[in-house]
Image (cartoon, rainbow, N blue to C red; front, side):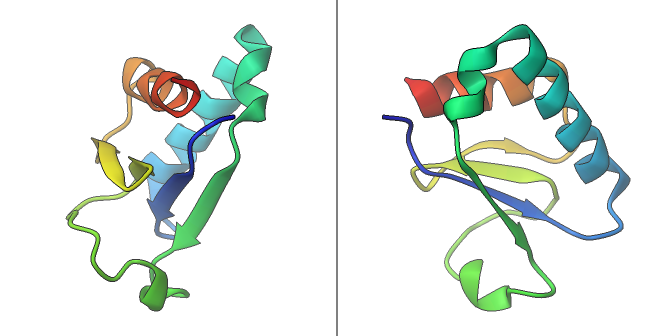
Length: 87
């Protein structure tokens, strides 16, 4: 069973959009990544959900409350999130 993933974003963040595009690209290459359920949290809309999480930049991924990526995404870092979640 995949671990719980939280993705912190801001609505107009261009890097967040890139991360979403990378996630979709990786899911086409690795269909097993579709099993990972990602809770997307827009920090301005749901500030109560980000309390206690230490990060400065978005997008940020937490897998079972452990930060695995923060800031400018790369395909390698987004893939790391998936592999950690399935780990």
